[in-house]
Image 1 (cartoon, one colour):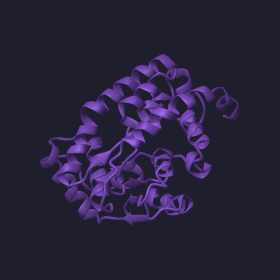
Image 2 (cartoon, rainbow, N blue to C red):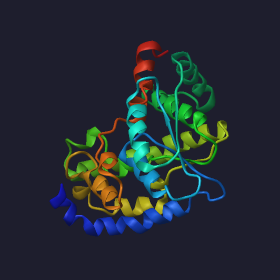
Image 3 (tube, rainbow, N blue to C red):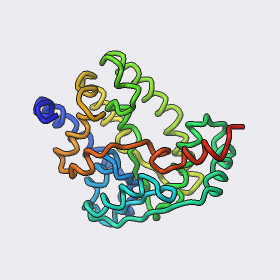
Length: 252
C-alpha cells in the first residue's frame, strides 16, 4: 500500500482543500457531536474536529457490540469526551416499528440502518451531529465493488451515491428533524463530492483493504493507523441492530 500511496500524493492534495471547506461549513454556534464508530470514516472527522471547542464523540450499540468495543479504545487515542449508549432489545424493536410512521415503508436493510441511526442520534449529547455518510460510495468501500473492474465499479458507485442523495440521506435528515437534531455529513458536501468523483476509479478501487486510498489519505492527515486501518462493519452490523431485528422481528 505504501508504494501505491506515494503515487496517490497528488490526489491527497486534491482532496485536502474541499474537505477543509466542508468542515468549515459545519454549524459553528455550538459544539458538534461526531457519531463515532471507531472506524476510519467517523475517525477522520473526529480527528479533524478534535481542536474545535466542545467537540464530543458518541457511539451507539447493543451490549457487547463491535462498535462500542472499538470506540472505547479509539476514543482514548483522540483525546475527546466520549459518550457510549445502549438500548434494550425491546427499545430497538419498538423504534423499528415507529420508523414506518416517521418515514414510510422501509426494506429490511433500510429498517436496520435507520433504526441504528435514529437510536444513535437520539442518545447522543446535545449539538449538531456529524456523521460519515458518503465515504463508502465515494471511495468504493462496499464489498460489492471488489469483484468489479474500475469502470463497472464506478457505475455502481454512482448509482449508490445517487440513491444515497435521493433517498437515504434525506430520510436521515428527516429522522433528525423528528428527533430535534441537526445532522451533517461533510463527505456529502458538494465540493468534496466533486473532488472525490474526479479521482480515477482505478485509484479509488485499488489496494487492500477496501478504501485503501481513503485510508492512506486519512493517515497522511495524521489519523492514527489504529483507526485509519481498522476493518469496519456498517452501522447496522457494528451496532448489533441488524442481527437483533433479523432474529427477533420477522418482516411483516
